[in-house]
Length: 295
Image (cartoon, rainbow, N blue to C red; front, side, top):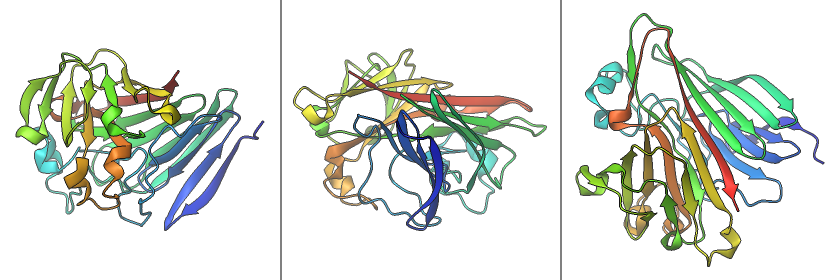
């Protein structure tokens, strides 16, 4: 049995926390509060670990679970209420400033069910406070907690931008969004409705709304090395984003091999587009995500 431990390590230019316990191991970057590795003992890694990821100060890292906050995507593509909150900031990076902000560990607990970490985003240039709880055990659980200590309501959007591995994207499907409405970024943000499972045969960039149950990533009978499928449970969210860049866009992306689109997909637990949050003064919103293997 592994002895539980939390160690400070360095990955490229970035400080990180390496967690080991009797059930699993994980790595969390202190830039972005970004979980980049999770693996239950005896199982394959649950998250896509990008071999071309670059760990540089001030640069977003394309792997694991980046945190998008307090807006999702480009600020000017968010609802006007969210744009109004942050348009006067001197910089407006894609997916918000939490993605490359500095996080600090303020509490942890080692227990029979695994390890709990509690981190907070330091020096936010807005009225909101952001913290993150990570549970590392038989499953991986994250709670992104936004608190509004100001005297006014604040609008924001966010996502846990989860990257998942697969051996063959063409044999991969997502179940649980049948009949749900979505906005299709590849077709001028037209409103459409999903029929059956989501499959992949071209560039895919969609915001889905209204799922009432869990999501499942199924990887196909021929993917023997990836026979364990993935269960996605969430709360505090009425939207999710499904993304794969496919061949042409993959060739243009930074930190991304031209062939990497074949071995990954993103299913992002979100509060995006019309699902953005209006947080009243003194109120707290929690976006929760739990990931585990399906046999």
